[in-house]
Image 1 (spheres, rainbow, N blue to C red):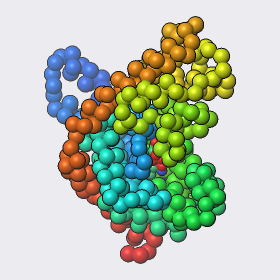
Image 2 (tube, rainbow, N blue to C red; image 1 turned 45 degrees about the vertical axis):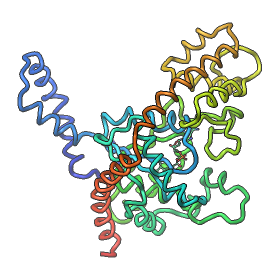
Image 3 (cartoon, rainbow, N blue to C red; image 1 turned 120 degrees about the vertical axis):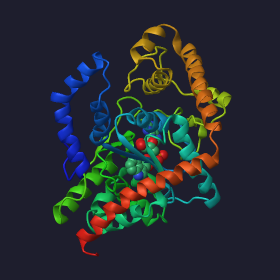
Image 4 (spheres, protein in one colour; image 1 turned 90 degrees about the horizontal axis):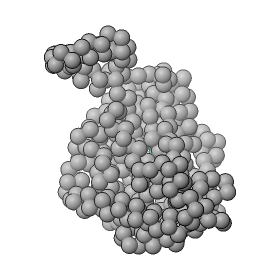
Length: 376
Ligand code: AMP
Ligand code: TRP
């Protein structure tokens, strides 16, 4: 059980979950065999909605999205939609922590949401919205800046250290960004945050902020948990398997963008670095490059790593890379054909609908928080 307050529907959900396991499931089972679709079925559907936990995640609309985003985050979101109440945001206020061109940013916001849709995020099941359209996010971030987040927390953040490097003019926003991320998550009573490995530290901070706020003002926030998938949580660069595949890398051959031309993408796979030796085996210590390619193959091709090792035993890297290039090419073709069928206007309508749903939840939470801290 996640610590912190759970809003009333979730509390009802817990009671129902227990009742369902012991009393209702056997009854449903009998009804199914008797082919009797009774009232209880409909009641069950309504209550199961309340049993669902809340998931929140987001991606910044900056740079080209790549298969690392797809495998580490979005594909996981797609499979979670069925069993959870999901909220997926295009986190544009995170993107401006580094400089963005306004007209490019405007288009990237639409394109990012389009990528969610093309990947299989279903707006009838999940809320999809633009972060800046719900101003409660920045308001709550400010409150957490004052109550909950400490300078010492932010100074530890590895992503900040990596991004700031030794530049002189680093924005306060880049430093403060994990606090905005905590606000994104905590605003919606989120229990689960599906992300890639690199975001775990930020979610730890969100947990600390929730606990600190709750212990000072009373239970306001659910303490969330990060969920990182076992494989694909960290897709590595094709040119340097010690580094994460990243949109900010200067050499674009390090990564396969979801909108890359298919032939270009295949060439990138053929040019990907490999390890010494010629055996296709999964060993992240001695063969990080091949292990990374095996992970990509397994996840995009729907085959187990163990199976791939057997299939390519004694065949060398050349064969393996050619087949992987085909798998990646096929995936991109399917993905892009879905992407190209979605119009900008469709996306804008979906974002508007998502905004009103997210806003309703966020404003209710903020009313409560403002009261708790004494500004209302
Ligand atoms: P960002 O581009 O930083 O907004 O990342 C959005 C989401 O994609 C986060 O959950 C990241 O952890 C995930 N992600 C980004 N790059 C990778 C990668 N190379 N491997 C796995 N997940 C990734
Ligand atoms: N910081 C995340 C990243 O760069 C994006 C993000 C912002 C996010 N707010 C979030 C992810 C809330 C999960 C939940 O990848």
